[in-house]
Image 1 (cartoon, rainbow, N blue to C red):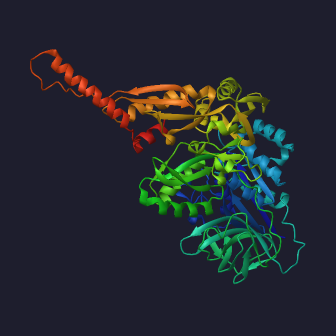
Image 2 (image 1 turned 60 degrees about the horizontal axis):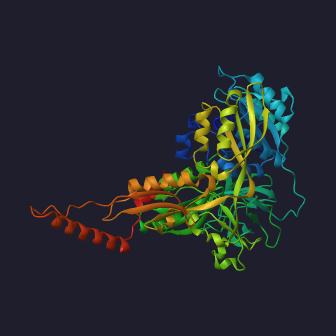
Image 3 (image 1 turned 90 degrees about the vertical axis):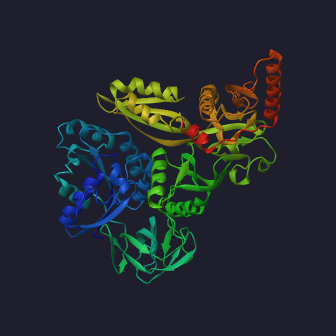
Length: 605
């Protein structure tokens, strides 16, 4: 076949999108006057932040061969986009900055490409920079891949130097798609992405594995059991270009006209026949960070629900479940691959779907082993694991059962890799060990740069760890992580009590060693933001019945003796005693209302 399917993998800001631009120019896919920087980054958000968020395919022609390129994100939070791109290709260009060298996320995506058994073409970019050191970086790449020095291409994507050599290497080194051995009249295609078009309905991005798809053909989606007719079919240039069909090995789009976002799912198989085996889809992705998304006004709930449904079609790694919060009302519990992913989803909802949002503090998913004979009585049956009926998956602290029913609590751990300078090894290790991390190994990529391996609880690194790491290493360190599984830990539910009554919306899960620090911080913040009442309000942080931190919000002091002139002191004392009794009675029947402003200020601590 005269087809080559490949993608570009790299760390953030190593020049993936710029190289894709030069390839599109060199192959004449777009006229020079139609070109702009980062052509494949179609979202305003991608251009503003200078990062790729969504994979984007484009078809090019070079020396008579069809080249299908998929531009991929570089950040570890979008690794599911990368994994889907890799599954649709036979080869990958590993792009490394000649001045920065190998970075942590370069290693992460390289290991994924090796798992998919792809042909790797190593390329050094930015060789024209004054700080470039191609000899040193070539040694790193040779050590990593075990390749020869002459296999590594040197280019400047910005100036177009060496880009034609890369295109020729794609043709020479990457194998063509393997011809199908199945029946010739059966077509099967893998959906590697999908978007919801306002006018066309759901548009599936597909890689044809067997046979051919043609316009007007009746197709079956094997996973969702839906049936449609192909209304339009074509390839990416990078905009939609209609064809009569897509042949075996080609990458393109299929318009079905489906209006239900749940009918066309990423990883599903499109087939021309019913009752045949689907293609192996993608490994189910496990969200790492959970947070609640709520509309700022109650009547915005239906709009938020529709927006999340459409966005989850476009972003298959987003997990969405309905949830109710005592302080914020109806909303959704969403699972994300990381904090950047959460930030991007929030911004896309606000920009693309005009949603006004409140987002709660991020947390992780915990496993709780229960010791009751009937766990469904203790937690909602939907939280129980299918393979372990006495283990519940819980991300919201308000759903945690009574401690007397808990046998053990397990938290997710991750394998953390940090690439930093030799002088930054000490600060990086100290920072990780403060977060309960365990040091595993250290490798030196060269004389000045080290690769550190750690195992660390996910909860300890999801909030401010990356910022602290950049601060302690003068911005030189990079990190990536991948899940290791669950481990039992000394974890406790930290409840916040207002006048002795628990405020479930403010409860958190912390390690027992950190409970006093976390509780004191929350109590202090609440003392600042809660409105005063006619009586003292006790603010306590407690683990079960044990109070670990406390603040007291003083009462209003109304001067009830201001209208008394002269006379004996007993006249004033009589009024003050009466006021004291009234406050005592009021405190018995009083209740603290947790305002939305107070709730949000605690979340932002």
